[in-house]
Image (cartoon, helix red, strand yellow):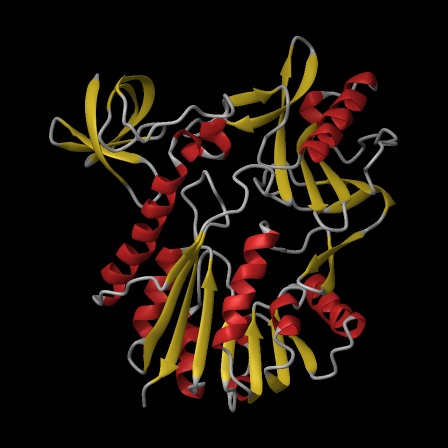
Length: 424
């Protein structure tokens, strides 16, 4: 069927109407007419697959990869137009939840549109009796897109290592059904690469991975019933077990399975902005501190800095990083933010936080509103949950600054930063 699409939805799909129903499709831009096929129909909306662009937008660009819908569906979009849409996404969410018109004070575009990621996760597929790297096809239950050359979102050298791993798996006659995922992480400034092969068979025999440029390798059994690539049992490991990245003029080490920012140059820019809105104080708290990066960068802002982190491996490396950067005023509490005692929050002057996509637990919001720090600095990879949380803070706070950062170019995802000041 032929549909005219008029706008972009919050999650990055084009939106149109057909027979009185909303219709969503990836690969289409606002203002375009496209031929699409219904793949899923609900009571109030339709999800469709693009078949052909009938009337293209002037904002359309050629995709760099044939699998772009699986990894970065906005490759087809003029970059300046991408940034405008992302600004609008942040501001629209803020208005929707707070009913206040909040305009961004700045938006920072990406320095690179490709090769910027420091982590990538590949699946596997079999073709002509050979194993290949693959991505799941967007919107499909089980279909995969075979990747002959890896993915352009990661560095070329890291892709070469991934392809070499597949070559070795094929040489050793590995059974594709034993394989779950392959995750590669790279330290861009220290030029380290580590790979983890997750398998679905506890008896898996791991081939030797002697590959130039691969500094560490492990294989792990991961529950085949879970969609998550998590190590239930380490089967083999060789080489380095943690990575080191330079952010600004500081070095940070972190374990393979610990969160670390994907776009280092833009994260450095975000930290410059955050540092600029801090003030000298007695106590600063970094919630969801991970390996301690934000807290340690802000070491000169407060006499006492406390990091709160739920993952023990990350909390351990936060302590290691404070020692190797000679930071004396930082301590870490290994605890989920929502289970952290109120007395830890009390007396805090500045809260800095970068929570996961679900945002803040209601207990964390309550603890913050009970302790009333002078300033809350909230970095988020999900403007929707950030705006939801902002609405709670506006009972006692005012948003004094708002920024956007294009950490994830060519995708609908965007990083947003809100700075709150206490008003009572």
